Amino acid sequence: TVAHEIAHGLGFDGTTFAHLKMISAVENDVRGKPHVFLVVSPKAKEVAQKYYNCSKAPGLELEDQGNSALSHFEMRNVRGELMSPKAPGGGSYSALTLAVFDDMPFYKANFSRAEPLRWANNSGCDFLEKKCIENKTSNFPDIFCTATVRIKGYLQCTYDRMALGQCLRKTYPEVIEPHFQYLWNAHLGGTEFWMDYCPYVEKVRYGDCTDGRRSTIIGSFVGPDARCVKGNELKYRTTPIGDVCVNTKCEEEGKLSVQFQGDDEWYQCEEGAHVKSNSANWSGTITCPKYADVCTRYPNITNKEPLPEVTDKDNEPAPANITWPIKPKDPSPLPHPTPEPTMETVGAPHVERELTSSNPNVPTDSSGHHTSERDGLFGSTTHIDNDTKNNLATNGKGPAAHVPNNSDTITLNIGIGDGTVTPAGHAPLLLLIFASVVAVVVPL
Image (cartoon, rainbow, N blue to C red):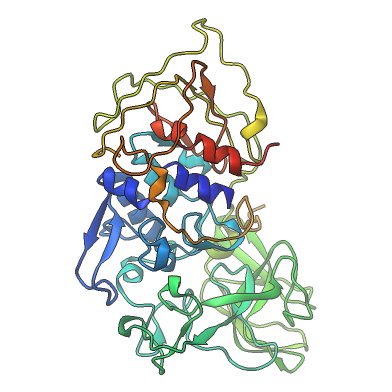
């Protein structure tokens, strides 16, 4: 997507990480792998520990599969995040990506604008250290699965409880690497190698609780407040259905009530309790979820509100001896005029700076309670990089981006997400990606 590619242009790239000394290798048999690479800079480490609820998390793990290696997050750990190799619906521009930018000397991140990410949130240290499946049993059944019951209409909750799906697996012609073999067949694994071959419940078409089709998700309540819950020998009109979407009502003090399809009665639903419908259409029970899993209210970050002016109080050069001149277009104390919206994408803020035509000298060693979950701002992406290393100018040593050379100043009007990254200091990368941004950002 546009946001994903702009993030690469702004420096979310293995080469940049290495130049800024943000990454480190861990070689202690992580989930059976010989080694993994992580972003271990301070903010990334802090956010990783908070997100996974793991005080010993060393940082944010990077992808190690295919051409996406080192320039994306490890998809097994952050599925659905903007900077994972593949992000259904475009991905969430979460605090994880913001933390990486914040650790660069070029930017300050506005974490209040982070989009929510649910995958493996608060899953603990075991999620980062243990395999998804051991002894053919999922260590994290709310995230990873092992098999699908092959009964028509029998479906399972997706990890975010927003839809119903199936646990899909794939038989590969070649033998899967030993540390990715979880099931009873060395050729059998999940459908995506970026997921380290871990199977997970993938949403079926028209399987959304909020606006799906009742003919697809049999027995489910469909509506804006509907969420998926686990079923226990659950049947609707004698048909086994597995898990089911129920209507939810979130009250104060953490009280949750649920309503079944075809049953007007509301039932109190305390975490872990088994609840059954009094309607003759139903047999079996549901297991009540955590209140936070279905009642968390996420902020509306799609409104294009005026962004506060970013004041750079640091007049010193950025770290690692990166120096570049900047002068105002007009020395008058009047505020900057509103920029022309020729490079602003829908939902994206602008980053406004007046830059001189002098090329920066960059040394090579610097470098109600409900809202429906959104799928991101820019649609769906499957991202395969050929080589993202060409994003950096290296002072004559290696590929360099072309920088316009004229006497006029340039005003850049670009951004990612909704106001989450703005320059701190005087980022040379903004000049370097100018030409590429023109090509990919759709004018308003």
